[in-house]
Image (cartoon, rainbow, N blue to C red; front, side, top):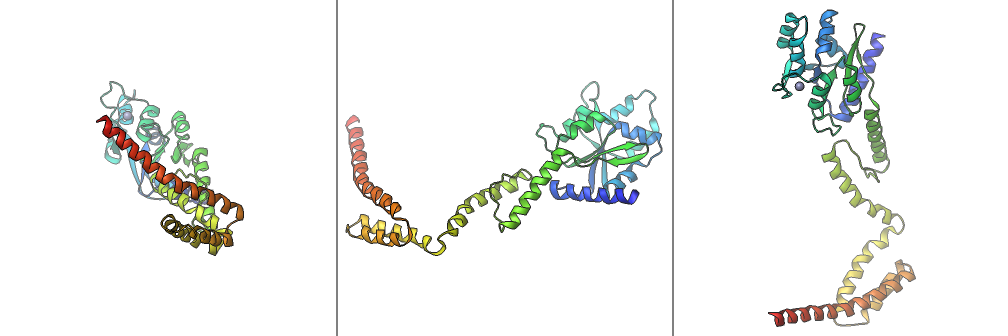
Length: 288
Ligand SMILES: [Zn+2]
């Protein structure tokens, strides 16, 4: 059992590392209840947490949870001393309030202050409060630990995390299939990184699709068309015919008909546009 669990937890933490960027030493926020329970059960909290997470940890406690220890009815001075010596204090800036916030309010504020469903600082949370864990399950990428009958348990990845992780894996799979060209997915994990990636991908996307049918001929043609256009607009009218002939070899005839139409119109438009502009200038000049 123990080996199995250790293996499962190792896999779980690996998933958190890959998907959410967790790195040891893991920052673990402990609430006052788990401190009290461990004290009562003579359980080595820090060793157990390390065993659970399979790596070095940085245990932390918020100011509110510390105050809760101070306010406890039979005040446990030894536990307070232990917490002061062994846990880093996480400033939650609720210390100016008359009463400390509940673990739910305080930890929610510390982990996801803007309620954006992101565990920005990659905290692991060890809490005996079911409401705390229920709330944090709605945020992807928050490893949750609690104590049950002297056994330290890490919850399986919550559905929010799991969905995000599966999306990531599908993305990677498609990336593999399409040779690092990701089709139509807007990934949501590392927003900064992947938005750039998505932009590159969208710009690259149309090219391979066009290439599929007429690989060789189509790409050089637009270039040659442009050149003939620029020449044809100048001195001689017969050149467009040559351009059409080149186009005939590759494009459908219907497309040529369409192409030929607008070209003539464009030529007519240009002088008109200039004329209008000139007229406008004249009008403005007249107005001035
Ligand atoms: Zn607080």
